[in-house]
Image (cartoon, rainbow, N blue to C red; front, side, top):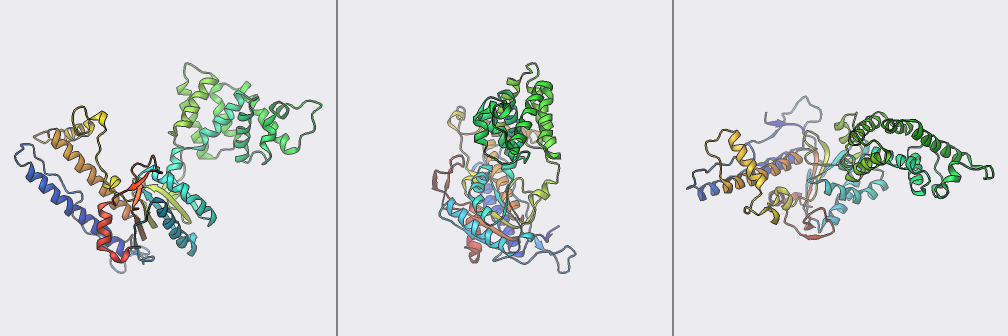
Length: 435
């Protein structure tokens, strides 16, 4: 099957060119490697990153709706911003232009190689999206941090120490966010917890909003006294009026916490387990709706990794931060791992195990296994880029900033970065698309 109707023609041309360029470049490298090691009895011929293929547009009259749609703008746009901040500016401008036309019919996504890139970009784009009423959906943030553990922890900390102004305020904030109590001056309420929770006969009458908040907080404290510990999280989830997915997430959370504190069932142990879950950002919520529908909604700009984007498509796809140190990546062996040599032991072991499982007569030695591991990693990165490029229907926006972080754990440390080799080849092949 060599026809596809998803993308406009120039995107198909760009994807075909990228595939052939990678195959030709690494085919030559593979031949050179084989020649250089021809005297070795374990020489293995490395396969091409892609199976040779050329995708064609569908024929006229194809039954699928809007097959190979007309491009928006040039269809393919290539940018070389000054730095990552300039990248976010250019991307923001293009998003505003595209969503200004008819946002109810627009689907768009930013595909990033790492979650840390998505986190940085989401922070940069949030003010712009709010100003122009564009829904921004950061898939990585949704996966990283569910609000359920945070809210449950806030209420449990209050139940454990209701006299703490900080814990009382955090609980009230959670209740206000869930719209269970009216918005009010929480600092005033939390400053005197005893007067707020149990006003004496000489205390001035509480306004209705304060009475509602006080009554709900007292009900939480009563539940703490009357319910067994293992039922508290489920009770709090019902109190917070969670929907179906949130209730399922709370049940998952309760099960995990109860397993962790088995044999030491106490409030302090439960709070410790919950605090660890919240701080580690490793608790994924339960989703009950169709994930693909959430990622591809119209009127929404989705930030998602290239890995998660497999099988999805959008009208407009943005691929920023296309740098050589990430795609295809550079192999750097940490000094603490070099006790046996300039290689990563785990990758060498995988290559040797792979050869054994595939029934090869000769198991590669360390040098050959390391070369094979590097080739496989490079090939996989280019296949991932190809998949990302082919997610776009009407516009593919690609960029590689001149200055970018060496590691996205420190995005403030900018330095000169070489673009991904495929990006440079695309600029030479499609000069009319350079922005």
